[in-house]
Length: 213
Image 1 (cartoon, rainbow, N blue to C red):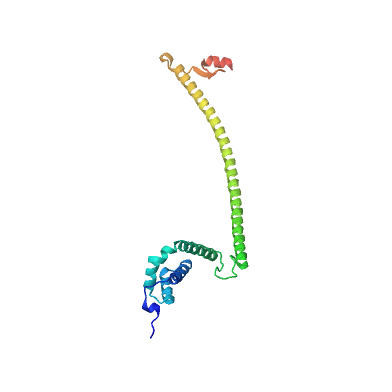
Image 2 (image 1 turned 90 degrees about the vertical axis):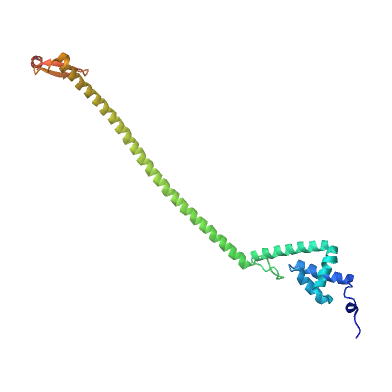
């Protein structure tokens, strides 16, 4: 049986082999797959082991395709970002006719926004009612405070008058005591006391009292 060149020389890598290996691995990188999966696919196409494809990639091909590798990684990131965005918005990124949001999703979104707006409006009305209630309570307490303040002022004035009357009464009693005990004299039944128009205590006799009558 005639042996092929590849069977005769397993270590001979051609530029075409390198290009096939690079194309397969770069595609796996762009699609978000692993390099190992790319080596397995390349081994089937090139008739080599996955280990041989991996060794060739790391030793030779990767250095030659560095810009392409970076571009494949960037494309993978971009595709991943678009897929995530499409999933978040409810679309099917892989479908050729897919849009970011279907009309049903738009309608559902608008309904949710309407419900949210109604909830906030209800909360606002409840807050307004509570504000009115608190204002009414404040006004009532303010009126009570004014009444109590007026009562306090009136009681303070009455208290001052009572204090002054008490002091005047104490002075009268003290004057009477001094007049009765002046120079050791005892209180005589023939004398009485009266308060003149100036608030002074005056001692009078029964005789003067009879004449005054």
